[in-house]
Amino acid sequence: MISPRAQRTAASRLCLALSLLLACWLALPSQASSSSTPPKASTGSPASMSYETGLAEFRSGNYMAAYKDLSAAAKGGDANAQQLLGHMYYMGTGVAQDFAQALAWHRKAAAQGLAESQYVIGTMYYSGKSVALDYREALQWFRKAGEHGHSDAQYMLGAMYFTGKGIPQDYKSSVAWFQRAAEQGHAEAQRLLGLLHMHGVGGVPQDNVIAYMLWNLSAATGNAEAQNLRDEAAHDMSEAQIAEGQALSSKWQVNTPLPTRSASGS
Image 1 (cartoon, helix red, strand yellow):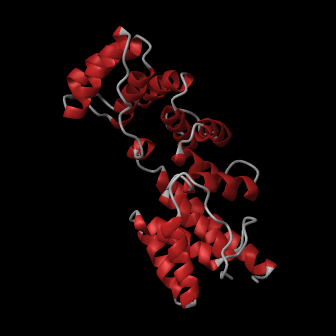
Image 2 (cartoon, rainbow, N blue to C red):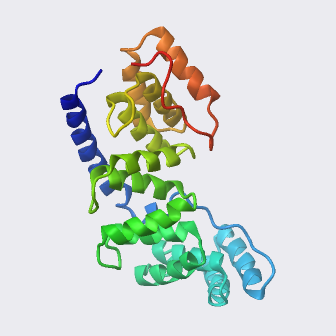
């Protein structure tokens, strides 16, 4: 068993690593929509028909025409058009980059329940982009998006609660949000959840097999850091432990509960 002092040391190191990681996670403007794809076409109203046309133009790279049709649809109240128009302003795609306009359109889409727009607003408050930096406000927007199943928002909530970034530190909430993101296949959440299990911090049981399984899942999606952690951990594991970790990761399916204890882990 890892000692309480070692747990505290590991937690402190993870807090520092997460703080640095969060700075990188939101450093680039493209991050706000890195996990998103243009919303699916909707049907029915004239606004939604304009959105469908604009979406097709956007996907073909005809951004000037897309902007015209998406603007009409967004002004007509189509939430998907409002979100995509917000992305265009955020990224400067087909229009001059304008974070204030991006925020305005994402607010309209968020008010209609679109999780990606709720997440983007959270990133803007977290980084102070076009608004005063406000971690508590960011937390509320991330929570809205996270409750709607947005895995990046769930990851951000986990990281904020773990580091106590502008809010009271809460390991229990942190682990719960990391777990939700990881169960959707979020590679970075899987990597960090693996670290918590390896060191037995954050209220999770110490279990090197579960850590190995999580790093194996994360590595399978291309996370190089997770691959390195998995390979390093394997040096101190028995063949039976490695075999169990491999079996657990092979058996697991996205959007199903992740195991928290293994039969042979330590």
